[in-house]
Length: 67
Image 1: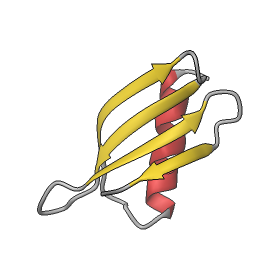
Image 2: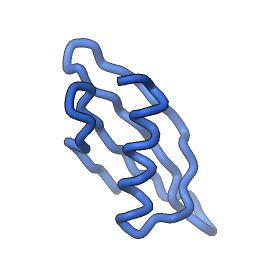
Image 3: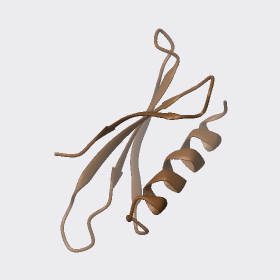
Image 4: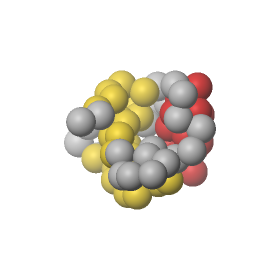
């Protein structure tokens, strides 16, 4: 999977989860786990960070973290 595909999958997940406004803050690929980790700011008036992990082979969201 290319980086753009991982961003599309994560962005689509956030939109469907009730976060239509989101800004990508960082993206990293972990070769040992074969996973993309994406950090988004979903806050409207203040920063609210969500971290998503996308499996490179399947394109599925395998982790979701929100403080």
